[in-house]
Image (cartoon, rainbow, N blue to C red):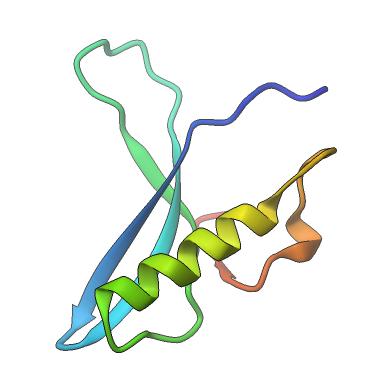
Length: 82
């Protein structure tokens, strides 16, 4: 079984009323004071509200987790930085 991944979800307002969910993963670090994250997936299309983007991002995050681990095939976002 693969190790656990430190994953987070956030929402960015890139333009006025253009909200994108972003799934982040923690970067390896020895720093105890802070956790640094990098974006790994983001919404392909904006939502009109923060709440809608958050719900859509949470839905995609749930689809990524399956009994066998990280299910990339179930995902409908754009890869970032990978």
